[in-house]
Length: 391
Image (cartoon, rainbow, N blue to C red; front, side, top):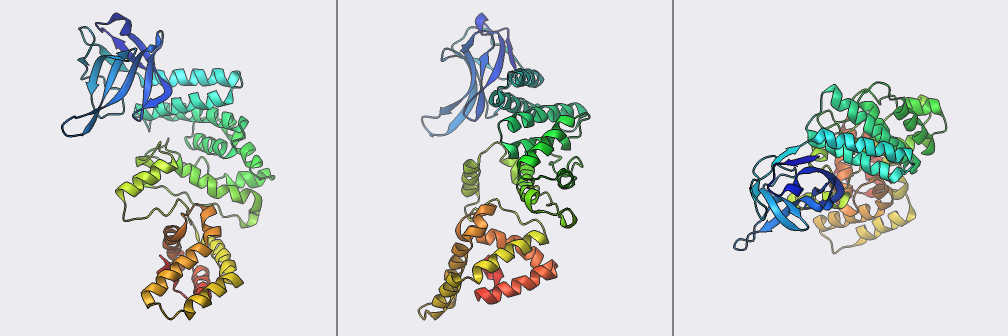
């Protein structure tokens, strides 16, 4: 919440709460009592001479600016406010993140009581965002609040039949280690059943790493992309794994998860493309252990031994108009197109960027694991190309 006091425009004083609406990548705040008549919004300003765009926060009445604070911050500033169209004095501004969280939790509880699951998810997400803005991470109070609100959101996702999201939030809640979260454990097991795991003992075995603190990023415990990746890798085990042969995936933490938190896939791709144009986006697929590597290579072998692939390979080698570099380029393209049915469902990008990403990851296991190395030699013979050259 943002508390405005001492403003020359008396009606502008009071408490403002974040709404689900956003503008300029920041929440729109509305007056608790007067609603949308009074808003606090982040606004852009374009310099007429240079064309440069700067930002600031405005407190306005019915679209008319009263007070403003120039800053590039995505958070409402507590200092630096100036008079625009309002009356002196300028307001005192206090930002109360904890109040936002408590309001969101109360609203989420009310929505759960009314069985409005979508609204409950919305309020829980607002509470999680408030916790992120609070700057806390390591104290028990932060962990307990985060665990509770994640547990609530997991329950709402379960009722909406979004079982992967329910499992993600339940896992994150249990990872935070707050006591008495049997509801999160129950949601995790029910989500696992809905995702294909009919044996509860197997589900418990697969979920054994949960709660050890190794799945969440300890430096950014509310950035859940690492949990999403782990859940994506775990789900296939629910229907295919046997307890005696179980190998639970290793969690992968990526710095980009923190930096690009809050962006959807399209926005993430745009940022990566803008700032790393020399590195084509290879997708989000992960090969996390030797078993994964062997499984993927077995699927490659099915493709490489097919009549269609072998016909393409022979036709390519029969061409006399290609130099070695051009032949290698054409081979990479042929292999990438042929393996699309294997790689794209795993999250690797279409074409050669996705192929390059998976080859780079698999090289680790070709060097360290004999079974992977032997299978790589078999594949090279089938494809008539060094697999390392496919990167």
